[in-house]
Length: 74
Image (cartoon, rainbow, N blue to C red):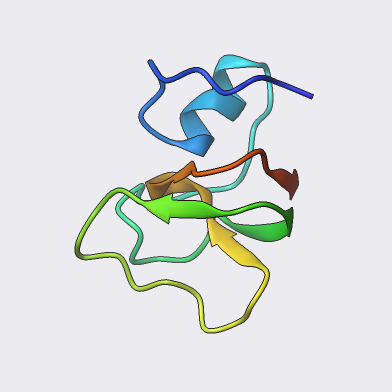
């Protein structure tokens, strides 16, 4: 469990700042290699050019921030 830090630009930045090493390639939301399961809560995408995942319950952590408390399967 890690509290959200508004100084972080995205969920992936928060994960890395806390010692996690999630997969990613581009950090702009177009490659989907950082796609993870969103188990609880709501997120919002921070880039207009993001192609959100087609599946419910998935999140691109490279270009999203939490809107509520979230649980993500890393």
